[in-house]
Length: 345
Image (tube, rainbow, N blue to C red):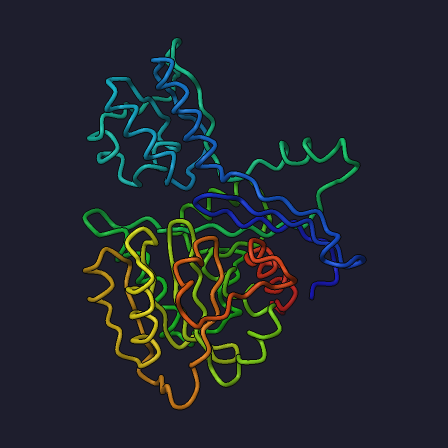
């Protein structure tokens, strides 16, 4: 593990999971928090404005959409107005013309009677202020995981564009070490926004953080060299990965809301057999699937480890529920610590 303190934040669709890692004490004694995710917090603020029949004005950074975008759609449907700065509006769509088509007005000046809602995935000042009364200070080094669809070219599906990123990763060697960024690609606009809010932070996709975190479970790590499947059932996205040693051989990504336990088990078995196709996942409403042509299932890849807050989808399957250090909800945070600790760049 890492030999220096680290603030690890894993930001999902429902929760933000926070670990203040310190190498001089057991992980079980490190400060740990499970809080509503920023999109849930902002979504609730919009819902309060809807109930009060108040217009809203979004200002701040591009952030994860999820609950916030859903609340904005309901706000507009109620006959109320939404205003947003150009930067904050890209939380809804990177293409501002599509944002305007929803009925959101782009403006840099807040209307006087609107409720102002600050957007952004990270607020280290608020976190530090909340912990200060307990005598807890934040580590200087920070690692943050978010799910980033990326800024798709106009007319391109954001689902397709995100999965092209995963496909390039697997086709390029699938090295776990390549999933950790100091400088993310420019098209990963959510990560770029996080960098503005937390300069110098390490960055990773939430799916990658969960993968690293699952490997912190001793039973999962013991099966790594023979090959295994790791499934992260997040609140909004589910990812299944063929992993052997430090190599990802293939993966699929889907929306959790589209999955039943039976469907997920079928996808997992077809992934193991090397038979799952990109078209099958994409046409079902997911992001896609890619398996390296060099993948050979052989006798391995039978062991399936599951993590994530929606892991109950697999309750009827003979899968292992990974819980690194006894805490499944912090899998992504443990993964961030492990990834930063293994970094040699």
